[in-house]
Image (cartoon, rainbow, N blue to C red):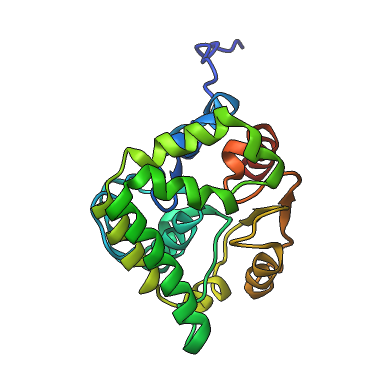
Length: 249
């Protein structure tokens, strides 16, 4: 008796699930760029919201070109878009990360009017003095206080904003002011969910992220990046990338 040897087959490890990164208000690929060298083994796609003026339209735009199954991370407004993607097509999302973001609609009464007035003030600046002048005021509250002296970082953020027009800013503000309540989406997420913000994020603070995490079925905790504000991917990319790699593993 003898055995016919089987042909030797080389082993090919499975391809990682594509990771789609969703930028926030007036942001583009630059907000994610510092992470990319640290995520070299991932198949990464960066979403473009185009001229959309609603979060639902942004989500629909992403789904038209996205792979059948993907991981997804949304930053700031992109986190809200990610929740709408999950609302529309939960079967296509393997993992979701929500970063420096929120889930509630515009508040009623005085609080909502205060937010609207603040956003309209920035829009007026962009329309009358230019997007860069608006961004120079906006960024004062969007990075950790000690990073305001980092001119390289600040200029990179201002350059990113300046690549978009005041008209795009107006459409994206319209999307945010008319945002849907995503409480029900959070309560129905049945996949691994990462919730992350910066220690010094004055716009989407730690308490807001704890409220989001409490709605999740998994009751996951909140990852807080020390010494980072709202733009944590650009402020502390190595720390964020390490969290990403652990989340994706």
